[in-house]
Image (cartoon, rainbow, N blue to C red; front, top):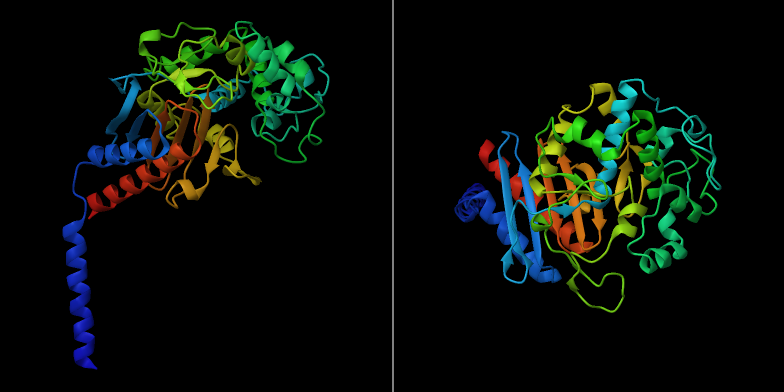
Length: 378
């Protein structure tokens, strides 16, 4: 028995030695790029841009694939963030609450006129955490029809709100993600500040954080030469995958005002993520409210929702706790994730509207980064 035990110990030591010798010691960026390239090929996506901020503050920018034709993806290329914009709108509302320009417990009638199918006693907080019950305008097929028929037309918030149907439930009685909530929040922010959403973003967030390549569509000029080219069928449902970067999108961008609209780079989004969750944007009390996650907000895509922040499903975070936000726009998909136990910020952007590809990329990156950090810690 003693000899058998010794043999088991020796075999264990040999196995450990073999595993140590086969540990991937390549630089972090090289490992991430290889993983990204594999996923691009697997899901037939053209290009991706990723940024990672490690606990020591170092920033890793990794790109793979192409923007268009033979033009390689570059770190300074701009992507539409889609619903990640909600996180910035939520931060703005929380700052306004800090300044007592409004209260999260204000009811809508204090700021907005009465609208059909909207309960005027809904609070700002209920808009932020999607417990208002307000109908999601994208679920009305007529809005899709009109958006496609009038691509060059500007849809005002008042017009978009005419597409709302009856609420899903009474205010505060459930959770239902709805872009309509953030359209109303953007309107409230503009009224409370007597300013535009882009002006508030720029003076409060982008300039102080030196985010010089971040823009809000419709209200600001986005340098066309910096855009990552995006690929899709442009809602034709014909199976095509063509370059739609410069096709008309005014109707879409105006309909999604407040719930979408920000364009930026992977690096600048990672800088925003890191600054926000390190308390450089909001007071501690406000950040705590933002991160007060509703456990009932469990869906196929999140395990809790706070104020403009989601808890990611662990199936796409390699089992690690992560929060932030995901987003999709015409021809793009993106993730912004913060890992509190590792103090790591990660952003992933691809130039195609695709669900599984960014999921698997985020999972791969988290596995690689956490293994890298474990090795660094010895």
